[in-house]
Image 1 (cartoon, rainbow, N blue to C red):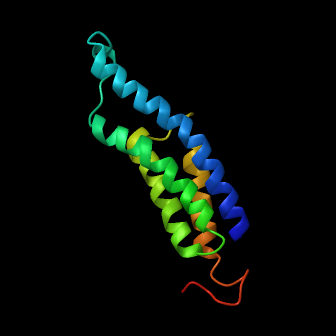
Image 2 (cartoon, helix red, strand yellow):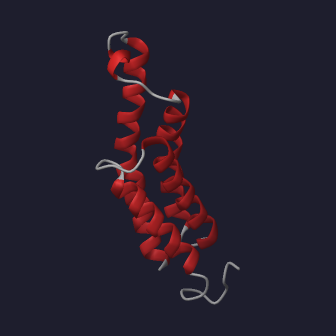
Length: 121
C-alpha cells in the first residue's frame, strides 16, 4: 500500500505541475492584459497562484514520504488534493491529480502496519 501511495502521489504531482502552470498563466494573463480580464475573472487570484505552486510540490513530497513516513505522506497527499480542489474545482483537467492524490493519501494513511513491523500510529 505504501508503494502504491508513493506512485500515485508522484504521478499526481507531475500531472499537477501542468495544471499549476496553466492556472498560474491564466491569472498572470488576466493581470497583464486588460482585455483578458473581461472574460477571465477569478475570486481569489493569489490563492490560485499559491495553490498552483504549492499543491504539486506537496503531492510529490507526500509521495516521496509515503514509503518511510506513511502518515505524514498521506496527510501531505490529502492536503495537496484539497488544494487542487479548492483552487481549481473538480473538472476534466483536475480529476486525475485530485483522484490520484486523494487515493494515495488514503492508502498511505491506511498502511498502518502491513509493510513494516513498526506502525506510524
